[in-house]
Length: 176
Image (cartoon, rainbow, N blue to C red; front, side, top):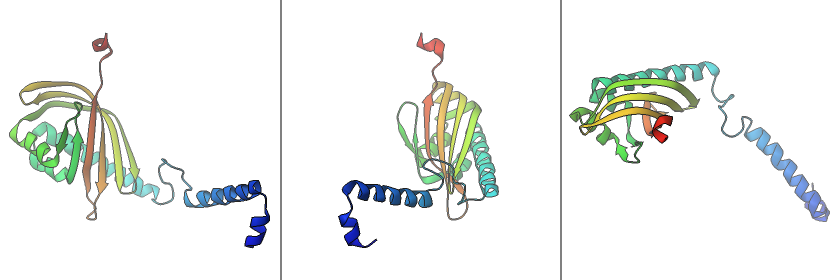
């Protein structure tokens, strides 16, 4: 439309025209909607393959933690890895690997349940429940934790853990 016609239109009509134009743009640009798994950008078979790769990484992490294998743990963590424990402390890759290597952090039991893996192109988000038994700095560590772990696929095609956060799941009997 020529600019003169737009300026002669009532303000309400111009706003309606702009709203319609924005709706068309958002319909074209964001067909999946915000927060949904992309349907167009990644083929279903690739999402399935990535999910399988993440499940293997999760098992490698579990095995490394149970066996005290700091070398395997280091290979799974990104250099800029950050963890937030259930007590709110922050841990870097070096601190996590050192804790396992030195024996300051040792798990004797680690059972994972309620695992969900979501893939967003080169990022994966895993949520699970972990029932653990072990020690940290010679203190008994036992309980149920819900955690989120974030993986990013690097340019070499390797999945690396970039973030981890855990929250203790309190037993309803403990709250009474």
